Length: 355
Image (cartoon, rainbow, N blue to C red; front, side, top):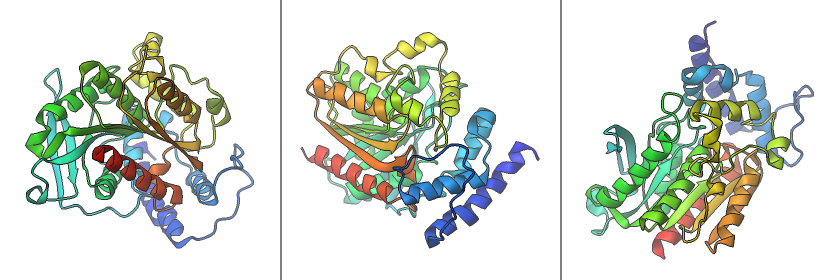
């Protein structure tokens, strides 16, 4: 069966079996044939999700090509999400990039504009994950709604341009252009540019961390950088990349494939806009909230980046969520730690904006 016809079938199977069984807490038998032993520290909920994913027999993203991988990610993105929060104000908009492109974005606000403070709402620019290749405003819709709902802030989710059609540093440039645009034009949306933050998950966390460095250099004050399991290293050679290379939500072949789509050459790996750990200095960047998953190839580089910030005197709130994997924050229907992370992120935003 062609891949394009398999994907909707997979989505239907996931929605009818995976999410329903999880909601009902139907116990699943342990599989003795898992190709890679799962880490003993996984929570029962996380282990159950991984067993179900294995039984779904999904074609790995790196074997689907960019368009197929995007379709697969879109099809499964909402399966384990919490119910979609209803907000009084959700609007689609466009943000101009430096080359004249208009970047799709979505605004989430916990109040109608007429009820919002005259000074405007604090605002978070959110940058979705997906290895610079997959993911979109739509795949992170529920998460952004939840952050707006819990924090009381406006959230602007950006659809930056993705690889392989748009190579490094296009995604970074789009993110930085959007952040600058919000700082200068956000008041037109009912935002308070004096209370501005940037955040994202995975590749979006990389973009957010690099934007925070650019903001420091440009004299643009940010209240917070919200980094959810960000990629920060030039090379995936940490101990956690070796320990969690296979069998979890994201694995070594997928990471290698994602970066092959995004980077022009090996030299791009040494650019701090791709690997923020290589930034010459991070003195004076925005305070950081960093949320990591214990069983994630990216956990060590997240800790290393937190250490780099702290050694430069930057306030850092580091949370490592035990027993969960990459992508867990989008699994709130099944994973309790995701719901706790939502609350932690919202509290960090509210505290930063109130400071």
